[in-house]
Length: 179
Image (tube, rainbow, N blue to C red):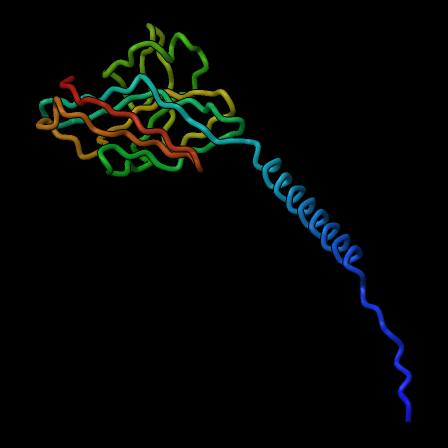
């Protein structure tokens, strides 16, 4: 009995190399397109800046902190938390006014204010309590009452003020002065 096997040929070396090369190019292109689409959907950024920071304490221990927060990102933000000296400030102690006048934002913030208004540059400005939302480029003047458990003994010390809005965080050092 004679077996009639033909000499079978497999895929040639050249063809195998071409298949591997084409598969690598296709997979690489898929990774590049997927990665590119991930970055394109996240081009809007959240960024905030705080400036003009002041913290006052009276001899009776009443503390007030004031600062300007500006949305420097490319999308609207809402401030989630504010902490002074590592202590979170309750939203009920936040008082703010949205202001886009650069001159007013750079004016020294006065210690004298009420929960309803503050006088900035000779003009009485109405304040709102509660959470703060800022559109792109907007800024707010913020007053915090009784923030960070600051007492009269803390006058002269420097503490950290941290403001967080979504993925954006801004930290600034502030010295407590007697006011």
